Length: 356
Image (cartoon, rainbow, N blue to C red; front, side, top):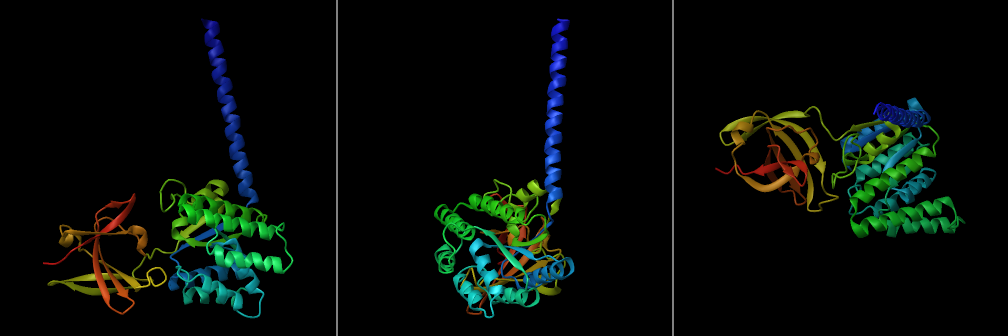
């Protein structure tokens, strides 16, 4: 009996020792990865927001001139970024204008996006773009880039051709299966490929806010870590992320009258909707202060708006006024409240009716 007990104790000691060695190796390997890695500064945007693009340019301009940074990662396919790099060395805007035509019908088909890239070319001319998204516009931009490579003598065996072809196949898969999990994972893999080959330099990345939450899951299914979360798992504290879509302070405070009562209305700006909803120009957001108790019992309409559509943080017990300006200039006003309601697995405000 005593012998068996000693054997059991010895086994436990050995197991604990082996587990400890494995844990030390994992921590050591992760530490080495972090030491060899440069820093990654990720910024989350609402696409085509003029205010955010201005802030992103100022950030990049500072990194470029004060920190010597040159590599800018963007939410575009590999071949789109390569076209941008060719345009950076060109004496005209033909390449950029063709890309812009390819983007028609998307959120980035906006003059402010065009101006953003032109400003980078003008003031940060040595910028190198890295596109890490799946192959959007693969039938136009993608095929045109392959044709360019062939025309310039770069055969299908060249690395550029293979990466462009890979991005096209990624886009084909994504659009055939509408697979957002595949896209999130592929964006991460593409980012790692581009980043690791830079051998430890610091980079900045601009992506939709849904992709840059250090602790967040993917936006659509909430089943896997989002891109920044996966990058943080690999590179640790080398990854820094900031959501630029959140407005912390109201731009102005207006007065809104509903019925016979006036409310202080904190204004948080407007977002352009024209690229994704052609019948609309924009929508604007106000938070009605100290108004929840007055409207908490008003009937809901069934219309919801997820929290991540708002340009500011949302807390339970708040009231919002949202004005949609349509393409014809007419305005639709909606009133929403935050009750902690969940819609398709994510928090959302509910529209309510104030009639009567």
